[in-house]
Length: 262
Image 1: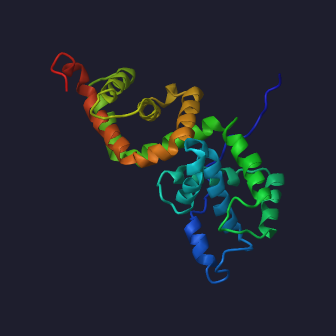
Image 2: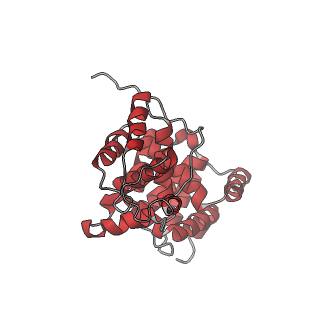
Image 3: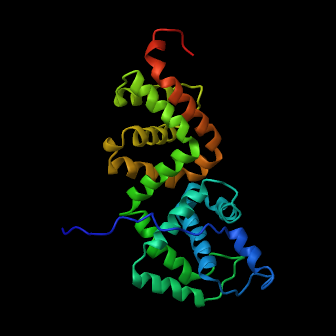
């Protein structure tokens, strides 16, 4: 069976940051009903990122809740949806020339922004050219991007420098530190689900032990993020506190094992 070759995504090119709310605001003076509206290149990309994010994560909720999920994405109700929307913009920056022509042709179509999923050619484009590659051969890249994004979202660079200094001063093996971190996360005080503990483990491993972080690790991170992004967003403050506290407490866990249970 021959291998399929492809280019790894180039994240160096700048991307737009326009939100769907901003698109609606721009169009208010032109089409109050937001019906049968043609879009600029930037506006179309914003609509594409919203549809992409919905398509990537709609299985996380029941069918009856999917309309609310789409509304939350369009209205920027949950901060972590920006993760997948940003990834979609990078995907569009890396499309082949033939696919770019397809995307440009979609600018000639009129859209009903009150029903963003109503245009079948656009939905088909998002599914075939963006979602299919994200959920298949680029899933590890989505996972790697998710780990980097969540690392920045849940913590600060100063906190990581403090951890790296502690590991160096105490002459701790990174693998041993990671095991202590995992042990700390198991404490009931954090109230974390198994997939949340695993995702935080992968974040710490990628940050402190990048050479040992494998494609399989990123695939796993991508699966967790795809399946649980809404829940991660709803609990982002809790996850951030758990990550920071566990990072601080991990170096002393061996000394606490013989003491009273916390």
